[in-house]
Image (cartoon, rainbow, N blue to C red; front, side, top):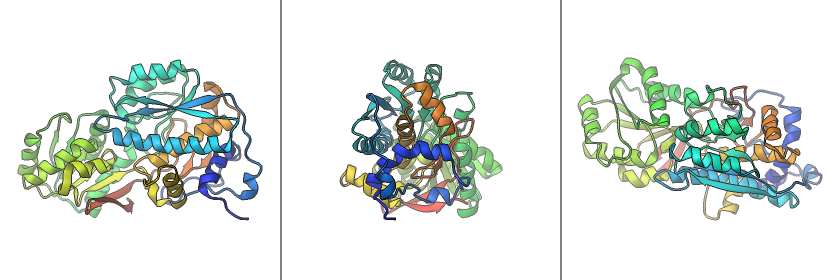
Length: 397
């Protein structure tokens, strides 16, 4: 049978995903094979019978930073969700789903009030987000009390699944997978005998850095935190220079990571720089300049641009652009909510129940959640900055 394009097929697929959820999968997700496969092909014969979902106007919401120092990451997520919603609405003219934005600037202090705004909008059936771990910790208790399901495509703090939140779902592996993988890469691939570790004292950055510290043990010869709002990191830079590590890991976000990398290089520190997923953005390269080159960045997010059909659909929606960090995970998250709506779930309780049995092929992996809200699969990818470009190296084994 002839295969349809992703741009048409993915819109149909989310209309039919409730069938996949009911049927389940013949095999468990694998951290390498399943997450390197785009499992979203739909035949023309299937497409002929799939359209025509009807519903009253409903919405899902994006919750995260669209502005501020780390707004690029939120914009990536919002774009992935927007693509999924647009495709669904094109395929289902009698069931139009809105996408409502809540720009938190990634600030935990702003998150509770914004969460309440989302809760008070009765049309909103699910949240794609919160984007960052700190705001997740602040906002999810409110979402949980309201029974409003969330699927975060990016908040990776390992402890977020340990709160007995019934609404919590994550579309990628957490830092309990990323942290040990970073340590493995530093020890085995970089063969570092001495390591420095720095964090930004946030829920995400310190949480990830602490896992790396604990895993590396005595290999860590220098450790410190920075204030991400500061302009001068000279005290930490001097500490690292004096310790002369082979590798320095930083847990935090891209804006201050760029400043830190530049100051380290300007001070003559030659250690290999390694960063977590919060740094995987071109804003890091813009802030660091040539100091970014040679840096290693890890992420439990897949490289959306490597999925040819998804990337083509993305570029068709956003001309001249390619999928960026967390965009594909956001697409998968939004698609799960859209599948619930296609299945006739038009209240929050029904959507939440639907997610509990959801089991469907996404762009990045097979999407199904365990009882804590963690998604199947534990892949961690390594990326490298070369000549001002972030390129995928591959899975960290």
